Image (cartoon, rainbow, N blue to C red; front, side):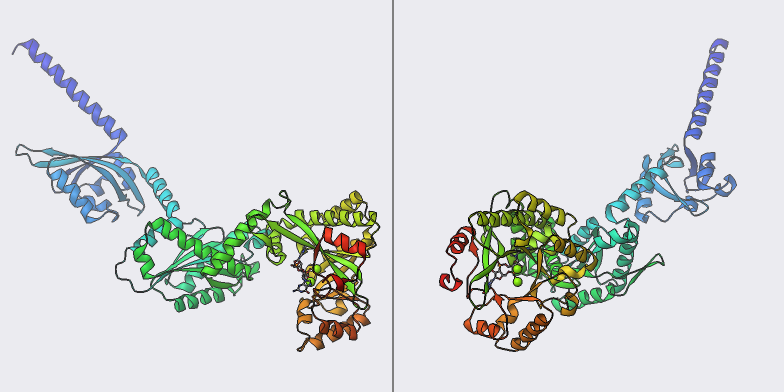
Length: 581
Ligand code: C2E
Ligand code: MG
Ligand code: MG
């Protein structure tokens, strides 16, 4: 070897060594590096290793990697890793380790085995990178995907996973129940106390549910104030008992922020899947969807009955609620489609049978459902808030009709219009009414508004409106009198002039009803109220009413409600009502 070649090689070697040093420096700067022998004993650890594990070099060297084991991974995980590197292959994976202070960190790890002349590994170099932030973020996302962040209860996703597991159980002889729980008037609580109190309340409700059910059901939060409970292997009796336990547990006030004592009730809808339903189900997602929907419908029904109760889903409830939904849809367009009309029923003088006044009654004829009873559709109009718009239409239509009758020289004392409590308490009610009177140029003295006793619950607001109406010269009747809670002496102080005795009392005149009607009549007379008896159908009823001094009444005995055209010709002929029965 010539001198030149020798010095060339030395130069090359120097360069290679320098490059190696540079690579080592770069790797140490970039990654966590450790070298272990073939028994897994650490004999090299770089600065970054010490930094992340919080152990000093002296604490690490001579130790097994178990010193940083977090216990997170299974034995199988490490078995596979060792198998790979013992075979001389590079292993790559993500490992959760434990630092000296007990905190955890995640590292993306590559372990490269180095082989001796026999092809056996004699040492392993591991290069790791800190991925803790990414992993924590991933774990958070995973948590959020399966748990509700407010109550820490499982969410719908986890509930569905659990449901799938339940469905796969082979041994099954009892049904599965799904309960849909919804808090009553939760919106009111939110509006009154604010959303943060609402949130605290939901947390406490979740805790109370867990405490009451003691692991008997999987509780999940669907969102808002809705919870779903899955109870497997349970009979109907058991579910009723459980539902009652939940309802009772809610009755204890919830203490929020040491400031508020809130009582909240719940409505519970229950659907059932028998072992046969479960065995024969087709697609799991459709099956659970169906059970939730059925429980939801039953819950809605429980709520309609006043809440604080549980209700099983039954075919008749399904049909009723479905019809309600459909009617609601149809009602949305009923005004534009001209499907409403007003019928008029005479209020007669019981002695002469002559028409004294009329009551305007709303009618709805729909192309799909035909004539629907106001007893059925008025509550839907109220629930949806449509009653305000429809109510205005009724007021205008009746005022225009009365004006028209006046133009035709038809003499009428008054026309009564039913006003829903919602409409009555609406802030625009008086203004709208005045606008309509102005537009139609009708003298308000021809109007009588019928309200029910439950309008008077919010007495301050009602009083204000009653006096404004009184000021406008519009008279007021209490409709369905006797079915509410108001006392006569209390009503006496309100600007009300007529009481309409509810039909149910007239219906039962043969039984104990006589005494009730008699006492209502004598008290009303003493307090100078006008009386109208509703729903008179027989001569016998009429005779009794007349005998006790009731002067006015309404009912099929005299005349059923009639369309405006028929009523016009009746009024023109000014017939006594008996002859048009
Ligand atoms: P209501 O105001 O007590 O009206 C009396 C109801 O009894 C009317 O039923 C009437 O047709 C019926 N009726 C009258 N005489 C007899 C009788 O001799 N026998 C029987 N069985 N029934 C009789 P309708 O028209 O079905 O209305 C039912 C309820 O719906 C009304 O009870 C009222 O509460 C409500 N309603 C009707 N129209 C309106 C309206 O325009 N606005 C509002 N807010 N509610 C209305
Ligand atoms: Mg009425
Ligand atoms: Mg009535």
